[in-house]
Length: 242
Length: 242
Image (cartoon, rainbow over the protein chains, first blue to last red):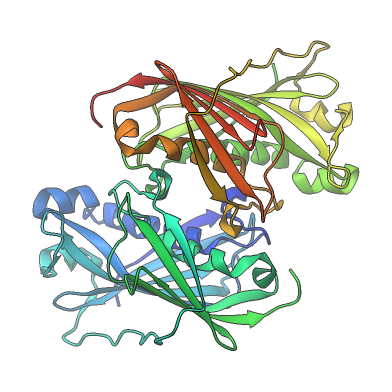
C-alpha cells in the first residue's frame, strides 16, 4: 500500500554471529536505519519531526518470520514500507531478500510518535505520515498475546553506556540479546529462531538493572525484562549442530 | 608504501553513541571489515588463507589518534594500507577522512597470522602478503609501553553469546566497551578520547568472566582485562558538556 523503499546491504563480519548468521540484534538495527533513510528521502527525518513537532518515533513491537537468516558476506536487499496507520499506531513492514529475490525474513512492526518532554504517545497527524502513502485505517491491529509464565531462570544486566543509543535509551536490539544470551551456546548451536515476537512496554534506563526472566516450553522460549517492561517469545526449530 | 584501499561509509544510527559520535567499538569493527574487503579484492580472503595455510589474521594492538570522532549520518572515507611487515608482524594503517578530506582519526595496528589448531603465531610468508605491496622490513616496531598501575576499581563481565564473533572469539571491540563502560555517563559526557592504545595478549573465552580493572590519572585512564590479557590506555580531553 505504502511507498516502498529499498537498499542493498552486505552482512559484515561484525554483524555475523558465532555461526556466520546475521545477528538478530543487527537485523533490528539495520531495519531501523533503513526506515530512517526512507524518512530522510521523504523529508520526514527525525530532525524534521523534532523541529516541527517535538516528537520522535518509537517502535513498540516487532514480529519476525524467518525462513533463513542472512549469512556473512551475503548481499541482500532490505525493503521497507509503511503499510497503514490509525489514530495512534503506524505499521511498517520489512522484507529481507536474497540476491535472487528469495524472501529470507519478514518483519512487521508497530510505531508510535512520542513527545520527548512528556514521554507520552501523541496522535498521528496526516501531515507527518502523508509522504509515506500508507493507508489510513480505523481499526487497531491485534497485537500478539504473550503467554504468562513462571520464570525458571533469571539473569541481571546492569545498563551500560555502550548499551545506549543517541536518544539516550537502551537500544531496542539490546533487549533481544539480554533475553537470548541466557539460552547459552549449546542451545544456540542446535536451534534457529523461526518466529520472534518482541513487545516494548517500558524502557530500562541508564543506571538501572535489567532483570531478565526465562521459561522454556517444547519449541518456544518465553522471556520478560523487568516485570513486563519488555516481552519476547521465540519459536525455535531444531537444527543440526551448526 | 602499500596499496591503498578506500571505501565510503555513512555512520548509521546504531553505531552512534549517546552523544551522536561514532562508537569506538564500531570504529574498530569497520576497520577490520574494510581490511577484510581489501583482502578479498586482492584474492587473499580469510577463506583463501584458511584453505591454503590453515591460518587466520589476529590484531594484537591498536593505536588511535583522534582529531574528531565521525558523527551520526556523516559521510566519511575509510582508507587502509598494509604499510610493512617483518618475520612475524604485519603493520596496517587506517585513516578516517571527512567529506572534505580532513583527517578525523588515524589508527595504526599490528597483525599476526595465527594457526587455528595450535593457536600459535606463524611466520609471515611472502606469498600471503605480496599482493598488498607492503614493505618488508627487518626491525620490529616498538610497541607502546603500558603503565603499570594499582587498580582503583574493578568490574566483572561474564562473556555472553552476543559478545562472540564468527571465529568464536570475543570480538576485539568488546574489550574497549568493557573498559570504558566503567567510566560512567557523567565522565563520558565531559571527556572525549584523543589517544587510545589497546593491546591484546590473551583472549577471554566463552564461559569465562572478564575482570576489568581501572585506574585514573590526571588526563589518562588505565585499564586491564583479566590480569594483562588486554591492556588499554586512553588520553582524554575535557570537553563542554556534550
